[in-house]
Length: 584
Image (cartoon, rainbow, N blue to C red):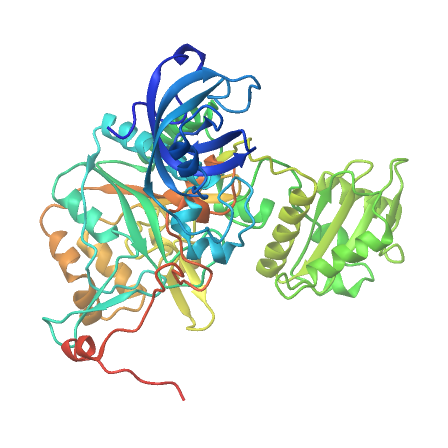
């Protein structure tokens, strides 16, 4: 037996008890006459003590050979500490060591393994197995496990069946690049890693399983950022004989359960907002509704004056930034520079100070009088002391720019409280979106999404106005889940493929298996997929998903710990009938 207790268990009730402990050496303090050792494991820290004057010399000499991260086992008696540590559970006691066994030695680690470390991110990713020993990282991985178990328990109680689907599938167009895997046994043919189990979960519904879920790895070969990895985890779910309301109620229930179980937060029914309303009011389809700063469209009151910039714009829109009328001209100029950055792309910004005395001071006073600016304040919801920021230009671009400014100001003003949770359903997405590059419509979600039946008549005449039977679940300005009611009728699916530009041959080659299945009594079905990594990060009060993943990739998609991706041998290339082309 390596241990009788872990390093977070012992307390004043264990005094005089003989115990065995094992773990890593966190810290050593040798005062000559006495040696203290902090022993760490997954659960916590226990202080060990060796009395250099009373203990046998071999034990003392052995203790003085210890270094940080040595793996040791000790046996000794629990005694009460004179100087107690109220910050740890074992702070009332220490263990007087009688036997010491060095289980393994350690090189000096490349960074300090403590809550606050001196290791940079790249260094910690390279030695991720050491980084995981740090309590903040360990806690995040334990937290993820807790969320995953809560999901499994809830869905199992709701009669969902956990089913695994294949990782080696065929390449199908789903909006991002596939990772492809060459097949040795099938020359010049390739598998693809799934971007999602979409078609398989539909086939499981055809198979009559009724309710399916899976916590599953998905893969997309796309550019990375803080909340994106090339491999990510979904809570993938599908249900048979359901309409949109059934799906929303079921997974609103799951989300309420997680918020209560994990965060101790109770929330009533989630608000709902159409896609059009979200874009008009917040400038994006995943609005953070923990704070205000709603958009106010100003075309009617700001155009047809002598200010040509507004007159030439498709959209003139503003927000009221709370308590920012006191900003100096220098501070406002910095804000204007911020929106003009290439990442945002605005050409400039008009501002209006709504002074506390009720008067207005604007960068366009030459063109607008006090009554005009008062109308701006009414439309944007500004109050005395607020600063109205106004952008103009093409509708979609301007909304995106103002949305970015809204989020930036919320961050600066401390309005995005990670301990506050504001869920929201966004519904009635467009079925299709126009692609300027290809000059044709593409499915906004995927080609299996059902259109709203009442909009079907518009598909031939005004396809851009057809609404999808689709929905997203948003939490604190992040899309944590999305799904739809699916097309289950073969003829409707063929019509959708045709409209999206698939030839019959292409549709059969890529989705023939699904179309064939639809001939055998496919039931109405729909579902949703949650991004587990992002959901866990938000519930954990963080923006980035990386620390909640055991072995994440860096921003270049590399695992710098194992040095992947990497070249393969010439023998492997020959077996796969592949040759490499070297860039000139």
